[in-house]
Image (cartoon, rainbow, N blue to C red; front, side):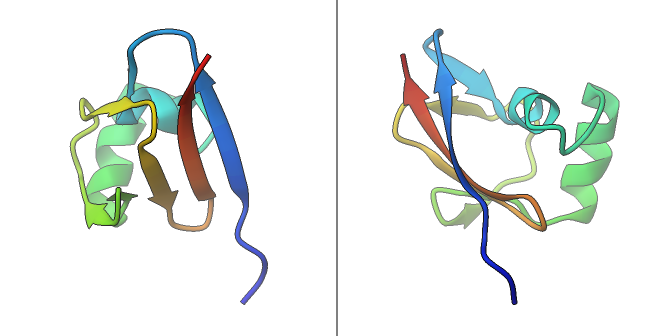
Length: 76
């Protein structure tokens, strides 16, 4: 198994949605694809599975995306 990508995602607002994160990090190309992606893949938010593209991610949250890496939400 290869090295897992770990990346800080800097947000300037109070939160980012899980769908926005997937789109911003080029895991999917649209919100519609995010819905399908979350149905087909187990995305972990703070070590718990979550399939809601509208899930609000705040400063300090950690997201693990299969085959994409770990993303750490940090507020600017």
